[in-house]
Image (cartoon, rainbow, N blue to C red):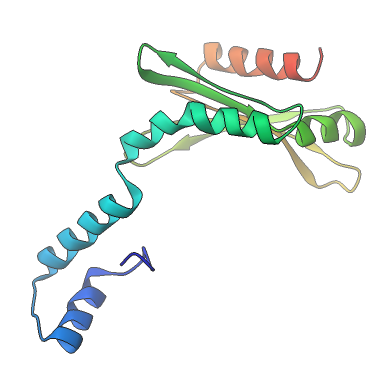
Length: 154
């Protein structure tokens, strides 16, 4: 299971019976898969604790980058990431028009991904910055665009 996180419960059942002669139900195979996934990947809620470290690593390893997480107490509120190369690429090589859009996230932890892109000289999309917020609303858009403007020196 560790080598392939896409290992299906039916495949687990078949392989255990062929290799070890052990028969198990679909539910047992599914629960085993979930248990191994938890051991290997950890709980999704624990990944949020790594975000400040990840943002610091982005800023440390990528000159002129801006990455930070905002919390409400100990709860995730929102996150902003703009790599220095992307900011500089926009300033130096893209048309001075930003296109912004939002995409609603699904899964155990919902939210909204806000993104800003531009067109480069070859008319290809060029990522500039992104943020993860609780929902698409005027306050979060204003925050995202304000931080982005600050990053671009405006």
